[in-house]
Image (cartoon, rainbow, N blue to C red; front, side, top):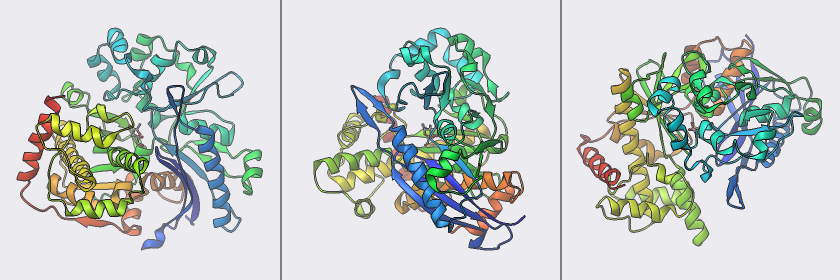
Length: 500
Ligand code: LRH
């Protein structure tokens, strides 16, 4: 019992943050969980000689700055613990002395071209899916390793370390491979929770390249003396292995009251689906491009990756390069006035993965499908949000059909929970009530996992979720209309798919 303040390090594709979560399990209202953002920093990938990299040292500096700020916010006492989560699939290579051999490459880099065919020749897609349950995404770790294994850096590599684990290594000096994130590599068998011999043998990968697997809740060490000195924190500060895949932490923070819920974890991506006890490894699930990622408490996230607010972030990046800033609030207010659903694109189309020229690519996709292209920024933003709402509708319907789980309510968590228009359109398109929040879902799941390990919150998904329902301000959206207009929009989006 008691209460405590934990620091969640949460690394997203467009920004990182260190969030303090103070947990008071006995409090009845908002005091049960108080969140304070200690520090937020941009994540700015950089292209060098045709390769897109993460600036991982800049991110690490952001983490250290955040821990220093967390110390100040706690009046010098420092957090009771630290946990690290971030986006999936990416890794760094370490030599035998633990030094980083090369800069981690961004999952949106084009180096994976051709690796799908390479793997298919070694292991047919149906067998790969039966062994791992992971949907095909061009940048899954397995493809990145195929792309990199001929390089001098890979030949020198002693360890392959997933990115949140790399940050954890720099903070603690200890190496591990966290299980929920390992499940996104497409090298792990979700039934055994261990590397899949079927896949690793097919590609000739030595799994001892990965540091030993560890589970959410396991201790990950303590902040190193040099980290304490650099951040001014008083030691010792334990580091806990949390669900280090940000989506796993985000779904652990869904404040659902019953198992009959769907979720949409929104941010750069929209991850839409259901939470199950066991993976769905059917051929129908593979063909629908549904994945089975591992979560907290041995749960499985049966979901589809949808392009997400990346489409909007990229439009804004293009517009801002052309002229004055395009503030998000203004764009959304104008988009809300555009009648819809109007022209729509397939927000699952991998053609949208790469950065650059997004407004033109969206317009082109509309025209290709025989629709009129958006005429201005407001219409473009509306097209993106209508397309996302539609993709959410299809993913929730497919998740129900493929898993047999009934969905009575859809929870929108992550950054998009702040986007009123997106939530409203999602409720209308899904024909189900939407409950929005928390927006900092990954950080909340990260804090909850630490609080459980510290014995402050009881184990299992339900106690944490009940605490969140008491503590968090949640916004509810009722679905409007019959859904007939969304059915027609679905037919238009299917047309852009056909023409692809
Ligand atoms: C979201 C996310 C998602 C992955 C992608 C690479 O941040 O972790 O779950 O598919 O990044």
